[in-house]
Image 1 (cartoon, rainbow, N blue to C red):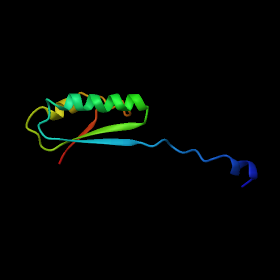
Image 2: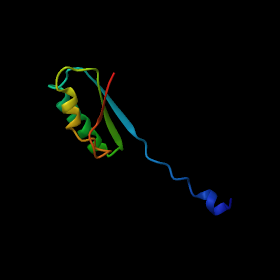
Image 3: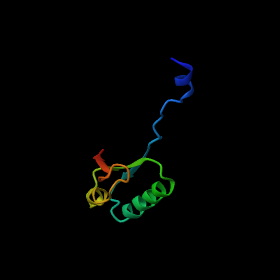
Image 4: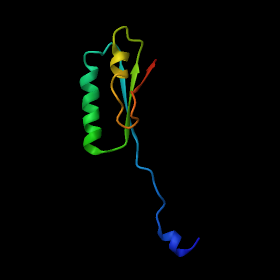
Length: 82
């Protein structure tokens, strides 16, 4: 290693934040929750993802989560049955 290469700091990836939202029959409240998280991600510009964990809901929770794009992934948030 030369002195010149030692002076250059290594390239470090920006931190990534995962917002994990547990949800059980939350179709009424979930849109506002996800909108608030997205607003904060947009405000800070921090790379992030939103994960909605659907705990076997019987309502439309999964559909609400799937219809909300994840800001960092450019696709819908992940939802998983617990």
